[in-house]
Image (cartoon, rainbow, N blue to C red; front, top):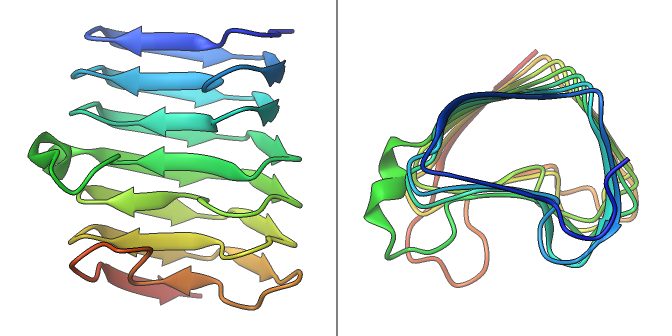
Length: 171
């Protein structure tokens, strides 16, 4: 179990994070930045951090997040932090077989880059499930969306971002 500070993975590649519980901490539970690449996060449970549970920004890419449980959190996953970070155009993330349980938003929240989300369970989100804007591309495939307070599952523009994202959802 990881409490307090999370993992900051910067400028490295070929990393596997598995079979851990991130519970109650400051900042992000897992932060991938500055070109971190080829990262696999699987069988991890994450909840109750002050910022995001997983943030993938500043050129981090080729990330797979699978078989994880996200719960009791407001801002789950940020991919691409700022409209000015053009290096985030190369971000590629795959999300599969994850359970987003009673969380608020950002499952993920994408700017630029590409996300393939398949076979995930979005269970009673607060604001929205998937947010894709600022020219990001989201392909949602065979996910289950069980709405909570809000029925907006997938959004093509979030906040004050200037551009829509491209979204396709099938099955």
